[in-house]
Image 1 (cartoon, rainbow over the protein chains, first blue to last red):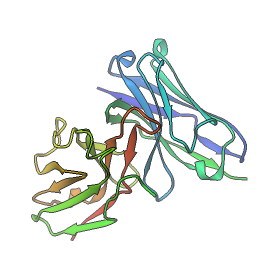
Image 2: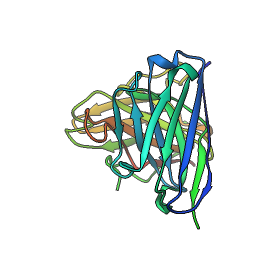
Image 3: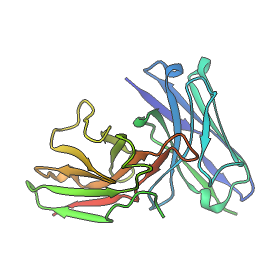
Image 4: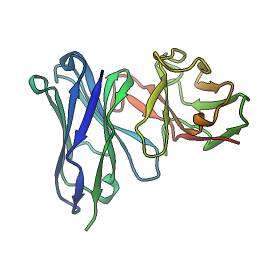
Length: 116
Length: 112
């Protein structure tokens, strides 16, 4: 069965960095686009970034452009999100999701807290 | 402010039907047949309930249905059950541009 497991969240100071990982299993990872979506505490969903199956096409939300970098390692069935220059407003649960235009499978999320 | 507009709340009694709207523009909802609906229970990850406007993934009860007219999509839950109480989010493809996926602000569905 399809499984997505995020890791790497935690508490970081404003201006700091964090790298999130998403381990995929149960499907041919290299065949699928993947996305990161976040949800601030008590708020709605916000799409963050997506990456094509080969990694050649990448998009970012304006709110993270220039600070976040999405990448993938198809040999390791893993998706990553490098987050730099973190701000308080980046505090959220970050989900990875398999992207088939629709987000058909989601991980359980990892919490990122940006606070001094 | 979310790109797609949903009512913040909706409610119905067990057995009744409730419809949640999702209004966008011709650049997203109205321009593509790629509207999705997600159900999220507290503390859980979102779950895909409807894709491509009206299709149900395997395992989703047929009490859930989707439709679209112009720039507005709708999710209807028929025969409401207690376990349907959750937050519901719509999303739409918005083209191969800066932000290809846009979400609604979410609707809290309460089963009275």
